Every structure is written in structure tokens, then in C-alpha cells.
Image (cartoon, rainbow, N blue to C red; front, side, top):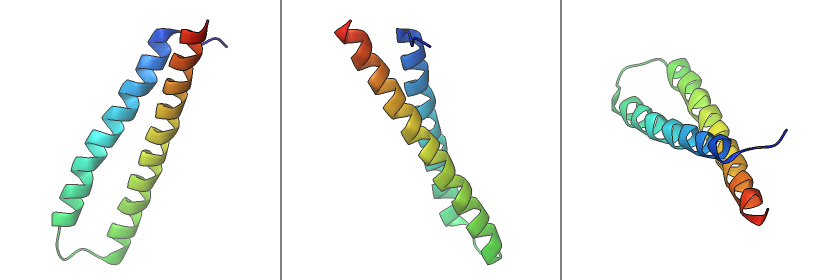
Length: 71
């Protein structure tokens, strides 16, 4: 599959969106009190997973943009 510029920009936009929204989620999670440990563990796993997805999408977007500039 050949990535176009719009694909690369979409990947970067989704990566930024994930980082921003999960940044707010981290802030809100830190502000909660009196929750069971499982609550924090489950949400931390979700945060780490989604930030990992954001990193992968950002790398794909940057690589696609670089490849498009070379051609």
C-alpha cells in the first residue's frame, strides 16, 4: 500500500489527539481519591496502551512524510 500525504497527516492528527485526550485523562485520574487499586491499574494500562498506539502512529506518519518528500 502506498501512503499519501493525507494518510500521513491523518496518522499524525490521531497521534496528537490521543496524546492530548489521554493527557487530560491522566490529570483527571491523578485527581481522583478513594478508588480501589484495580481502578488505577486498569486505567493506567489503558493510558499506556493508547500512548503506545499514538507513538506508533506518529512514527508511521513521520516516515510516510519523509518517504513522500524523497520521491
